[in-house]
Image (cartoon, rainbow, N blue to C red; front, side, top):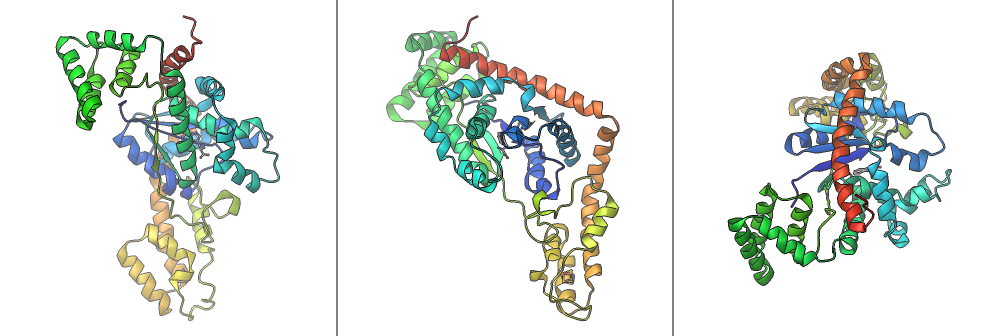
Length: 400
Ligand code: TRP
Ligand code: SF4
């Protein structure tokens, strides 16, 4: 119905690492070539759990944007912005909070999970309970239909869909809707108006999905309709009222296969990371001191790659030839572990080279990053303001 649009956000929690790159950023870089994309720093989200550690968010936000740019997120293709610089997110969150049943929020699985996981912290807060609704506002305010997230976030997207549905149900019907819709049809102009009516009938009477799609395409291309009229006609097609908010779908991001240096998932809290833009010497040292197959004590002991985290790195960084060399060399004690690690070190350094290259300019001139973000905020804000105009009008709190 609306053009395809991707939106995703990330909390500014500190420097990003290879896990983020292979899990999330590489996917963003791919998506930006296929769709209009909006990527934002979820700074208010960081506060839902880190409300008692202020002062780090601003620096983390800009550092994180440098990591995105280093990874290849391209501001000429994607819109990069900071959540709190588009205060409309807060307004939509507030307005939607009026119609959000408490039970829906309490039932979101991350609510209890996170409270248990972060038990040292008091998360019986209003903000923490409302966090999925804030996320819903982030998505709905851009009418984004594609939201790349990891598995853990899928319930939030489902929740967002329910909220959008409830919102449209409550506020999508305006007084005199039928009348206004019929007026809007006329504005399409003779031939197109007739075609629209015909397609609408075919869909409503025979459930002809192709007719529905054709009519939606016709509306999408119509230039001379106001935004409100277009909305009405989209709603009128399917028989309901106006569709003000768009139900998004999750674009499931494959879980990263990037292990940490110890073979567990790479995560800052495990202290097993290699950060993006990390110094080459430091990377080399980290890999060289990595744990290997514990059974392989002496150089002459044969090893088993399946019991060795280095092998998991080879799966990401090495080609078939090198992998075969590792398998044979390890099992026959034909190669030493340091020898085995070298192609991994080379692979990581090779991958990071263009990242460090891209980041240099931004590290030297922080104003560049600020300008990119300011541009992105302005673009995002325009979109958000359009939606808010419709939302206020639908709820009945528009005064001009
Ligand atoms: N909640 C997400 C996380 O913790 C971040 C996020 C906030 C987000 N708003 C979003 C992701 C909107 C996708 C869309 O990872
Ligand atoms: Fe691990 Fe390679 Fe050593 Fe085998 S040779 S134990 S795969 S580092």
